[in-house]
Image (cartoon, rainbow, N blue to C red; front, side):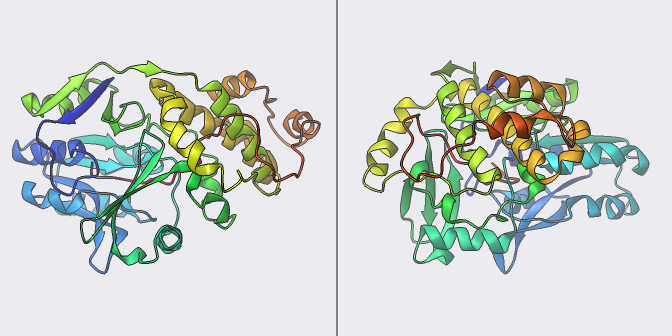
Amino acid sequence: MHRARLKSPLPGAQWTGITTRIAERLLETGAVDAVLTMVPDPADRWKPVPALITEPAMMARARGMRMGHAPLLALLEPARDRGYRRLAVIGIPCQVHALRRIEADFGFERIFVIGTPCSDNTTTESFHRFLALLSPRPETIAYLEFRADMMVELRFDDGRQKRIPFLALPIADLPPDFFPLTCRTCVDYTNALADLTVGYMGGEGEQWLLVRNARGAELLALLRDEVLLAPVGARGDRTPHVKAFLENSRRAAGGLPLRRMPRWLRPLVGRLMPFLAPKGLEFARARVEMKAIETLLHLERYAPAKMKHMVPPHVRAIAERYGLATATGPGSGLGAAEGARQAPTSSRAKSSPPSAPSTPSTATGG
């Protein structure tokens, strides 16, 4: 596990361009015949479109973030039919899980998997509505990123930049179905089945690499002296922030309105959050635990019969740390246990520390 950044960041990359540079190196060295990834739709820069890239220079098209649903793995069959034997795939966790179930059926000689973490996804159309809440001219937003300092960074076509504290985001104004239930019940934020995960949550302002196996180490070695690596640090205490998230998630899963901090208080707390929030690995652990909590609460409400098979042991262990019962099916104890502690309907701000909202993210070329 490393903090990392390219010595010379690539233009148009979401961060410094580690993901797309590794893919370029795979093509340059002949390690793969093609890279399966997402590129933007010509008519909508935020809409993902699956692509098979065979020339290193064409990887520049894949840099940056897209938001939406697209059939990435539908191009596995065309890749095989074109005679490609060695393939790299860049994908988010749900795509990688599906890939691992079917990859043996295609008979590829080698598949390298570069994974990016994903918290939540939504349709491209819904994402446009979110952008419209952030700017009076959403069509001019060229870049959006949820940063490790509790800020959302926006960049515009005219070169302007804007940072918005997480607490000032209009998350509570989004419709209940903005994030699908499949995202709200996903417990693989870190893309555990990838050979190499490239993210940012544990990077303290830089990128965060998780080398998961020998093939992942092979991918990282392709960068040679182009990348700067450093140990991953951890600062702060995630516990109060996860507990605050738990309270709001319990309300959301129960159909109650989210608690809103008074408008006058948000700028002050927003400025304090970068100093109060956990950092590095502690920040990453907070996000993993928030996803575990979100999974349990939403499954219990919307699909209790699936809890027995969808909640792995490590998620149950996280739940117990925060006082959640580990229900396993209809009639189990989570709903009953939590009912006695149901939050009141008052809209006043909580006294517990504010937590990071559930942040939308999908495959990036950073």
